[in-house]
Length: 84
Image (cartoon, rainbow, N blue to C red; front, side, top):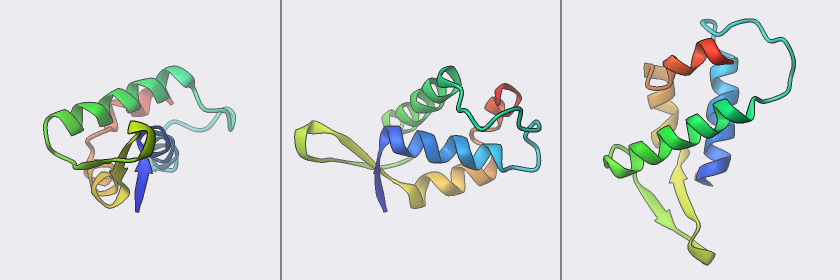
């Protein structure tokens, strides 16, 4: 499934929060600073060709969740766990 980069960042954030290694949730609110950093990491992965993308209408970038989800599971985003 192709998602906008911002939506992929939200899903990554939520997946990290559900991880058993994550700190206990203080609230259900998402931290915008951490979301921006996750968004930046996804962009870095795009630039380094570790994930692929498509350009949609209005020049929006779409990424494939099937490529990001395994990276989250293998720990590519684990350095953000302490910030959640």
